[in-house]
Amino acid sequence: MKPELDTADTWSFRGGRQILEEKGLLDELPEIAAAYVEHGGGNQNLAARAERLDPLNWDQSASATFSVSDATDGPSRRADFNAYKDGVLVEHERGEQMRANWHLLKMEAAYRDPDGFDRGEAIEAGVLLLPSHVNFPTLDRTKDDVRAVLANSFDFSLPLFVWQYPTEER
Image (cartoon, rainbow, N blue to C red):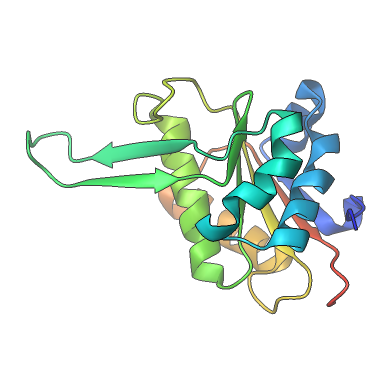
């Protein structure tokens, strides 16, 4: 079952929706959500999701490396993203609000520093997908976290689109 994109279940920050519409990617989000409904998350389900996402040219192997800039052997952290296409990063979370916020922060870091993004391309927008059947994260809580904390205290500036897509388990 492919979830239907309903505006009531979405939120756009700094023109995220408009960027997706201009790139023609908004209409592909239901297929990405359907891949998660059908196959779940995690690396063990990567091949199964690829059967749905590869025909749409969504890459599931995008990552970024963040490191301490003043140390030659300093610590670094590699961050993987669930999907990438044409300047748009997608993350899916179905378990914890704090993990959803981590997804947002790593997308923001790749947006601010394209040198960290393994492809060296500019990130233009991020998408966070949240299934409706979970208690957290939620669309409202994510919206509040971005506006009240991330944007105010950490200068979060990534154009973002959040969709709490409908699931049968709702």
